[in-house]
Image 1 (cartoon, helix red, strand yellow):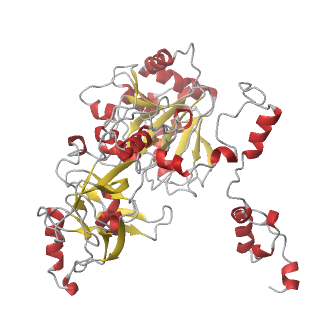
Image 2: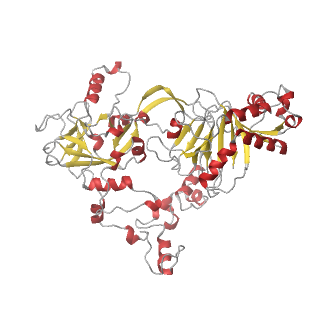
Image 3: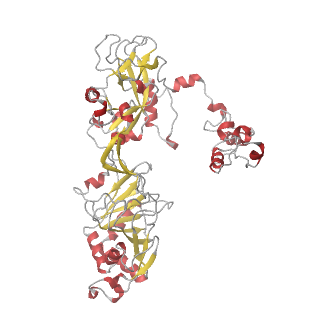
Length: 578
């Protein structure tokens, strides 16, 4: 830009966002022309700058402390000052692990078709650790590439798991056991350049056989200490700094289920150890295992034009490296109580937290529960709903019959009692009860969810009485006793019905009520053979579990409990907020 064009540009904001915003509208300026204080954040801050330094000085010299637990002039409890942030090299040596020890380099491999490899730069003694690598723990299925539908309008690239397109290239660098759902990918420099050498042939130098093997860190080693701390350390108030003088649990991941290990991905570690003396400039090789070697031999003997795809195969781990609890297990999140309900059904009024089948821990410490309803409850309330015409109303709403087609977020009031074929089965009051219908966000999600709820006082009293007659008071008593409530108030109750649903929204209906509010959901009509109808998000917000509705069992979702209904084709169910 010349001076005249540049002068017409607005002054750039001192943030990266400001810079990007200007670029998007064609009005960016060269940050090298700006004064220091107006440059983007990353271009003018000193290396020792920390945003909280100002707050630190305010606390230190003015005695300001909101918690009132600190006296004037006392050092703040967290390392926010530049002097506390800057560390000596000796501190890194005490609190860190050297990954490659400076004895390795990358070069052209001597092995055919291997590309690059790792070589020693000095003599390495037998039993010496030459490389330490953190490991990414990844579900085996995540390496599979499935067919997707790029034309999907409501959910982009929805995968079709019935059709496998291929496998990720990363699979070639992952370690695993054929009987485990979890693969481990080294993330240290140099680790993924180490080639296959076949089984070790003893002390013979410069052979094409393996001269290195992988193992878990030995007890008491620096790697065992550091990663034992990293794997077990908590977050927030539970976080503790690493102390090299403290003894931490040795390789704690070996005791965990693969699902739990994958949730701590990056916090476990391999050591690469010399099987024999390794000479200077000798290529570092490990044994990829017989399954890999057989797969490679089968692939490499096929003419390139005749191959069905690229070579993809994980590296085999040494015998006994994977503990038994990592083998022959599922990588699917399952709720224990739901698996047990058929053989051990909930008692009426019994309230149990939903827990993971693989480790017995709660899905959410206080937000997700199963509630036992009296036997026959669902059928009784469904019969009532049929008698007053609500089911007939849904038949017309979901089929979008004339007079019952609502636009997205459309609202209408109906008298479903007038739709009942046998008018003598109900009285005049029931025939004239009014219910409202609301079609929810069908322009945002590919589904036809309709809410139906009582509109006039007669309808509200009728629904509440029907719930009581079916035995819902037993469930309410159980919830009250479980959480120590003196009374419960029904805030709102509604039917929810849907016949098709590609995707809906994960959301929380209630929050910040001091654990005194609940959504209680139970089924009336479901369709056999469909995928689960309800998604529940775990408390860490990293995991979503899909569950089926079950007769005579309600799900209670509490404060901040995230759930997503009708992910796939339920028909009709009822939600009560208390």
